[in-house]
Structures are given as C-alpha cells and as structure tokens.
Image (cartoon, one colour):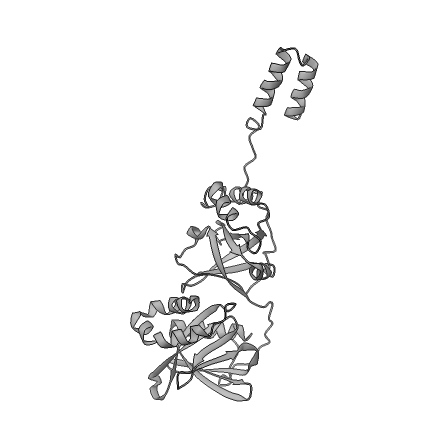
Length: 324
C-alpha cells in the first residue's frame, strides 16, 4: 500500500521506535487514503494531562485524518472545516475548529514534524501562518490570496541526480507565481524558478531542446538516454513532460517527468516566471563545416565526370545544396 510507505517516510527521522508504536494506526489510516489523495504531512498529536497520550495525524491533499480515543478512524474534509483558530502552548499547538455541527479541539506536538504539519494545514484552509489567533492582541491585517496552491506527486524519469537530496518520493508544489518547490521524501523543499514546461509530443525534438538548454548548465545526460526514457513512456494514457527550472545561482535544472491526464491538468495551472527564456538561448550554433552535404557533392561530381551532368548543371546543384 503506497500510503503506508508515504506515512513511514515522514516518520523515519523520528526513529524506528515511533514507527513501531504507530504501526496499527499507520495501517488503519492508510487504508482510508483514496488513490487520488496525496499524503502531504504527518504529525504526532497529544491528548490527556501533560500530553502523555500520543496518536497520529495525517494530512492529505483532501483531508485531515486521525483516530479517536477508541482508535477508530476520523476524517475531516477541508471544505467542511470552519472557524479555525490556533493557540500555542509550551510543547504543543492547540487547534480548534467547527466541523459540521461539532466543536473539535486537537493538540499538535510542536516538533519539526508538527510545525510543518500545522503550516501545511493552515495553507490548505487558506489561513496564512501570520494571521493573529483569538489569543493574540496583534492588530488584524488584510490578507490577499494571490493564487491557490498547486501540489502533486511526480515521477522523475531523468534529472533526479541534479536535486540536492536522494530519495524515492518526489513532490512538486507552487504557492507563488513563477516558482516551484521540489521536495524529496521528508526533506525540506528546494525552490526553483519555473522558466517553462513542455508536454512531450515529439521525443527527438524535445531531447534536442533539453540538451541544448543545458549546454551552459549542469549535467543532465546524453540524448540517447533521455530519448529512451521518454519514448518508453509515451502512450495512449500516459505522457511525458519536461520542467525547465533554474536555481537562484542561475544553474539550469530540467526534469523529465511521467504524467497522466490529471497531472497534465495540474501542470497547465502552473504560472511560469514573468521573464520567460526560450530553450534555444544556450544552443551552440552549428558549425558550417558540419552542415556541408559531402556525400551528395561527391555523387554529383561522379555524375559530371561520367558525362551525365554538364558543368553548368553540376554548379547549379552545388549552389542549391550549399544554399548559396
């Protein structure tokens, strides 16, 4: 079950003891994750005096999942969560919200997992983390939501060696126009400028574009390997796309990813950087010597020597081939 592995990846840095303690809860929650849901965060939740009782919270692209005191599954759809507030405590953050007609109160352990989880949950509910809560005296400030976050799991066919982290699970997110964040497993995401993205319709043309784009940039692989990865995955129900990314230092990072129909729909919503650049800017102009059609000229010369072509006909064909 893929969801089980996704949840475990988030918990791995906390150690095998925690993984073993939450084994049943991991399986219980993972069974309820739909195929089109993406696990996007995991946190340790606490209840009881002193927060000694721990249980599991899982955030997906659609819901907040956890268990009740009887360890039965509970799911909260984001669209049905209202009146969300937070209250920071010494070792945890208390969240309160109304779900349908029920008042819900949950404590999230304030470790690294919990902090990332809470921020992700606030983003899901369109509540920026700097918004004052009920227990703050900070003046209320106007919040402007520029765009809805776009998040998706991606399968990288070529280019993963250029990312700063190694792993098996890759996620793409866009929360600001013109940039995307790529995260590997539970590691912190790296931010790139999104120059453009292209769906692969013509494998050879796309390969030429990628190789040319990376002449001045970092290593990406030879054209044959890229073409093989693409050609093997272009089919009726699946497609391939190339993301043209840039680091802050100007390093160029193209990623070839496998797509299905839903992935392509999400890619179409991405907002590229305002100052787009074409993939041809770094292509080295072809040498004039390599473009001369030597074989054709030799055959024409042989035809003239054999008396089949006249000198005038040979000269005319020669100029035609050389473009002069």
